[in-house]
Image 1 (cartoon, rainbow, N blue to C red):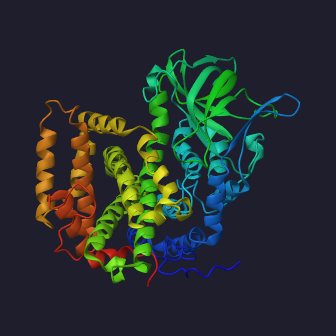
Image 2: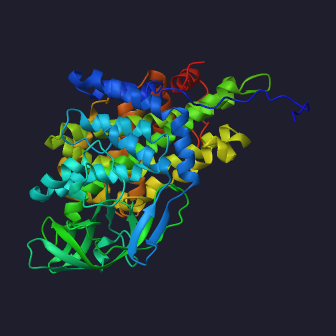
Length: 545
């Protein structure tokens, strides 16, 4: 029966059917800035196709289905055999298949590979963030596996393949594989040196049997995992396949799946090892050093993933307020709402520009850029992931009650937002890692100072912030208790220097005034009213009105 009580009006249409890449000016400029000219056109074609898919009705449907039907644990088959499998909704497999087919697990050996992959990761995970976890770990495993060239020769082509094959089979018989990771244990958490899982060597060179557990095992449906365990000579990194070459299941007892705040489409598990066959990666006793290559790459994905969440939240907020009228005119034109949107857009742009600069440093691979990454990655991971949750919360508020209901997609973004700050080491771990680099690696600090020094003289507030940061670094008294303050300043100075060099003047001015110059409040929407806020908001609009 049709109702005649009212008509529906003044509601924003859904943000669907648009090109997520092509409408992101900030990301498009970063790709053009950092990619070699000879691969730019090809990259744009691929990113445009991915952007259109990410903004499609189909991708939105897959995302909803994957989150409304979370993974289910199947410990035994119908006959009572232990299988330890995780079943996913078909939408999850479609999301993963599209991502793998777009090259989001391979970057290491193609020109501009990391910039292209980071841009693609930022675009595609705006459709659904949960499946970014196995994509990230599969991509990041490559540098760790290269500690054993023979192992890398077998596995790297499978990890970087553009073919996604679901289901557990002997990995070397598949056209492409996914790889997960298990580091933390019940008694230690981030303190992985407290791990108790034992690795007993076998007669076969490089082979061991594990006994123990992992409190958090990411993506337990993966074909293999990098894990840490105590070998005779200390904590060591190992490759653990789920299925052995003869087709038998490696002992890998999934005790339960974690019931998480967000990241609902993805599975995280508690697992037990009992005579589980593994292959050593790197030298005994060097497990942390070996696996840190993987950790560093996944930390960059934490930055990129948070930038993606920020961009999607800001796009939704600007889109909604553009189409919503209130108090006599478009909401986007109201001075106070414009201030909020501009502040959110500045934060999002700073995150994107920083993520892409780090990806470009990976592509460069030189000594100076590698040193820069050792300091910049944990600093960026600390700060950008910390800023994600308040930004998404404020963006949700821009939609009012419409943003608080599940159908808007904003609650899913908000539940996802804290994850990257916890994954691969929480805030304190990142801050302490920065201090460790500052104490032990002067080349890293020199490379960082050279980077921010490229913008010196362009903005007096940035110059003052650099001087204050150097003063802070010169005072070592109680620096561990001040670590978060120090790392925040490092990240803000780096973001400011990049925006001064590459962003439009109105964006750089807003950032330097509010984040470096003290002319801004603790909440979003407190930018100086004299700035060109309308231009900042227009730059962030996902679809031209």
